[in-house]
Image 1 (cartoon, rainbow, N blue to C red):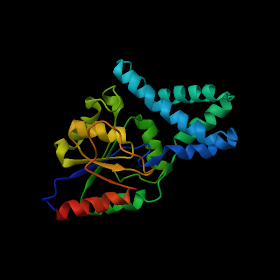
Image 2 (spheres, helix red, strand yellow):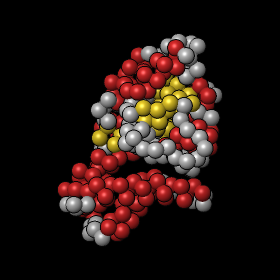
Image 3 (cartoon, helix red, strand yellow):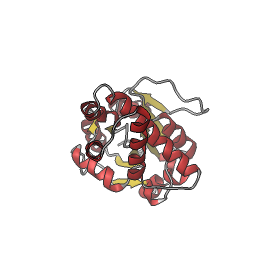
Image 4 (spheres, helix red, strand yellow):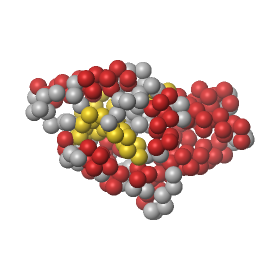
Length: 231
């Protein structure tokens, strides 16, 4: 790794960035034919909404319980009969979300180039450890940080502070990678160098701040760092 490169550490968001939260739509479609995609979308939207509302109101609740709450709401909203067995099936899948296909090779490439890697997630450690193991990513990360340590979800500054604390580095020397543009905005305000994995080709949020770099998948992080080195 070029010692002149400002980025020394790369921290990844988990859900949507490393793990495909919408892959759960396949199981949802089997359980509720014709509703799988919409259920996955509404479940995710409400899950994130609840983290924001609870952090703003200082009413922290474990992310797993929020995930359950969001599922219950989404099914009620769509008029779907969510019995205990169906709920258990869907929640079980949340611990085994599909990883995006380029992830492992990209993470291995970054480690081979000397970068230390981490995860900073809203999920609790049990949830994220299950997904890391299921995706065969064990051993690729130097630190896995959950916001449960501070009792506040992203985009609270206390949540982002977990990264610099874990690696003992200023935020400006850490590249924060997320597929969620709202997360990129929060991380940028906090002081991270940021990269947006814009898988869905979405327009940027109108919050007066944008990513330092962006690309269509995780491999573009490698290309971005190569370009940053030569600038």
